[in-house]
Image 1 (cartoon, rainbow, N blue to C red):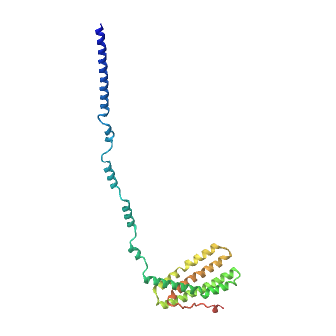
Image 2 (image 1 turned 180 degrees about the horizontal axis):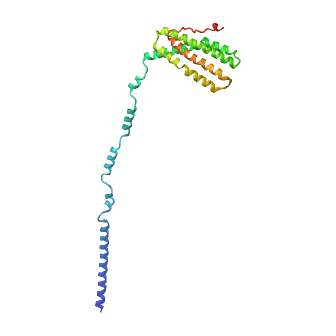
Image 3 (image 1 turned 60 degrees about the horizontal axis):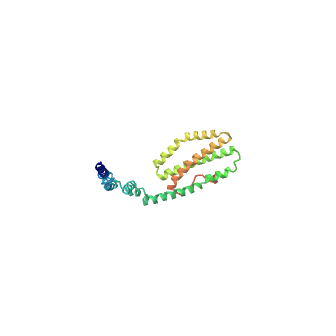
Length: 235
């Protein structure tokens, strides 16, 4: 009996050794299973692309160059130098236009000093009624009509019977009837006692305007022309 009791403790010790060795081997196997395949040094390396830097460089190289694109568009929208220079007046044209402008200014001064306007302003100071003003405007409408006829005759003589001038005068005469109808219509629309004054005044302006055109052309041939009307003749 004593011998069996002594054997049992030995068997128990052996079982403990086998249990410890089994536990160690199991733990070692678990470590190999968890870390042996990938290894801590290789963790996450497979998720990073190998050629990431090369892809970045290639994508940067594929971007368009903004400076070259802008410069090409801007240069294409610029006007050509020849187009700008061609629109500039030549030296001869500039001097001719300056001379024409000077002639126009000189004629304007001469026409503004005509004796008919001065006489009309003076006479209108004595017109006290609408009837007086209408009669005065009608009288000066006839004076200006005489200036049209006189100026046209002198212009045709100096221009050698210019056909364009003749055609212009005929066109003005052909529109006389319509012009008088429009003047009467405008005066009637005004109504009242001023209608007759308005009609006579508009008729005077109609002849005065044409006389200015005639004398403007005559000025090119004779800058020293004289008007037919004189204040002395009126009295």
